[in-house]
Length: 279
Image (cartoon, rainbow, N blue to C red; front, side, top):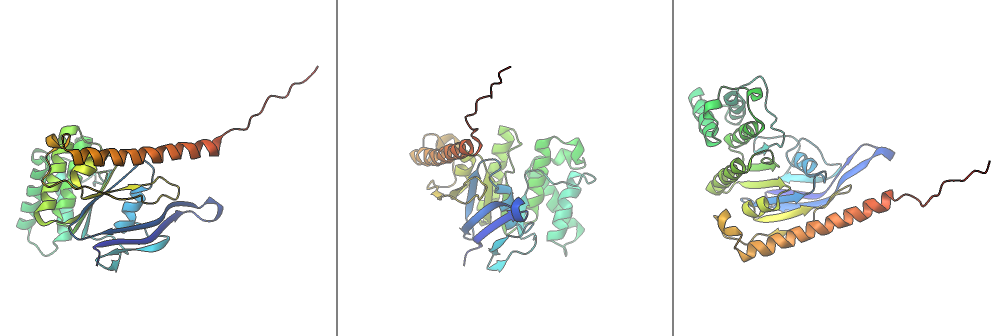
């Protein structure tokens, strides 16, 4: 039985003539302990796909299954790291993380909650800011709080919606390594949504492109046959990395050219000349 499965999933917004079919015929299977990355263009429906998986949206047709059961609501079993932080502005860094920990461990004592919060805030290097509120933090620091909050819940599956895009290169690289370290510890199932091919190759077992919408659907999968743990400094000289990266980029560029051709055809203006008037 697949750990996560999407069967013939379609998602449409609106009704009648104003209806827009964002996702169509989405079929995806992720096994327990697997790390899968979905890569695609901005506006291709990646966030809609994430919200279907985490239970914030329901498919128009088809079904989303988690451990064989239909996904009907959100659950701390599926920890989500959002693109837009989603922090409560009136709570401090520690309180934002603690709120999630209390939901995941409702029967634990205060000492456990406090220790776990401190551990994950330290993991993202924010201990000096543990009592600060989101408005006092930079965008990158807020995203690190969101990462700590999701991982502190000890989710069975980690779902990441372009979580590191707003970070500087050094912080982004460090958090990639931290997420991989936590994932490899007990091989929790992970799904990464990204527009960065290199990030996907470094972190995932498989990369699956999402063809842009409307009517977006998944393309062919690319397996990452590179041993773990992976060393970023050595990847550039790895022939498998080069071959895989080139194949994915070539596929995405082909999709981009198709998209341009369709747009040009849809919006091509007729060959009209101004009417001349004789006085």
